[in-house]
Length: 168
Image (cartoon, rainbow, N blue to C red; front, side, top):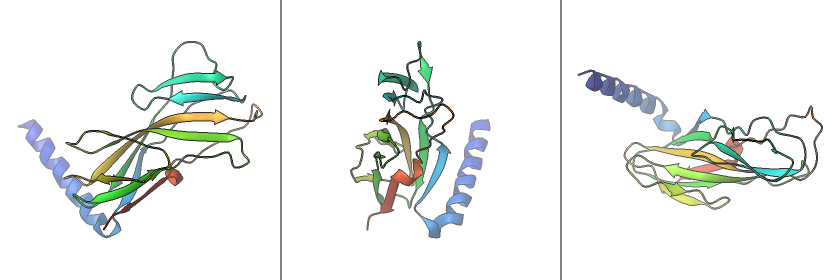
């Protein structure tokens, strides 16, 4: 009985959410920002696994910490009309003078469907399924091509690299 009540509440909540935004579909909702954590400011490369959350040193001195380190994979939702094809591209960040490279990796997840691997910088057509929600689980590889001062904070905005639209 309790599960039924919770399910009914969730359905009602989703119905209200979708009815409020029906004219604004599709849209992106950030659940969790992609976060590599604190890194050294030296040249090198690190990879963040979207599933295990493990941060791996790929060489250099960007993340040369001993032992297992964890980051926070990104989790984003594209909310679209039900059973609609959505063209999605997850773009890389190229070093445009800032010495920072980011190559995304991860999956698209739609309820009741097999996961679809993300192919960086390529448009992929994903069905929104019966829920109208496409979940993006995002890790990737971060590379510094130039040393940064220790007090430097750098941000690569992932949301700007998620390009999407419904396909007619």
